[in-house]
Length: 227
Image 1 (cartoon, rainbow, N blue to C red):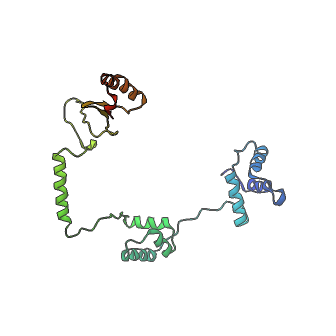
Image 2 (spheres, rainbow, N blue to C red):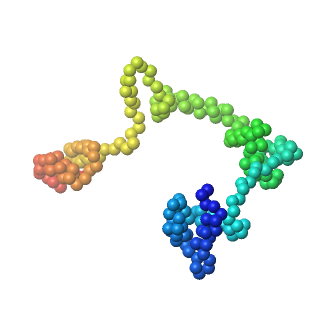
Image 3 (spheres, helix red, strand yellow):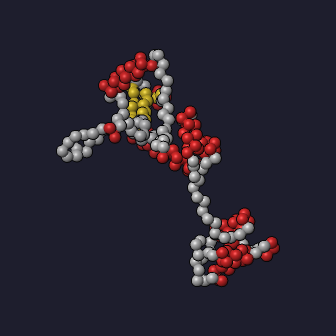
């Protein structure tokens, strides 16, 4: 934080303490707020940065930002020659080989109008592949003629002055099924009876009461009934 002077950072280090008398970061934040109510609140990340700088450098003075490395012409020339010899060398590998920053390498390549092009994966064509392509096209045209292909809605257009709300029924998301029941009483076929819904106990009971029982009562010999 820009408002933290060197003296304030030293004061924060004193608030942190040392050894058994060390405070937690939450306690330091609360103590700093009570000591300096007119300053913006302190956060734990800033405390960690101050501690890390003191342990690494032994002071809490403001560290000037590092300037971008100056790359001489010989280094640039060696970089371009290495890239000319192996154009697929990764930029990070070039940075390691030349002891330069990765961003510096990217800036040099951009200045030299070098663009990264993505590789396209292709399949090898064998000797009989052209014949297979012709066979596939013939099969595809046959399926189109027989209306056996589902349509891609994005590629279908209906040209009209007004919206005709054009729809075409394709494959349903649910399988089509029906239940069928049939029986034989002596020389007579009973049914068939079709059920659009699943055949449960209630529907089967209605079938027995309203369809099968009247037929079985009309027959005197129930032993001849075959199910």
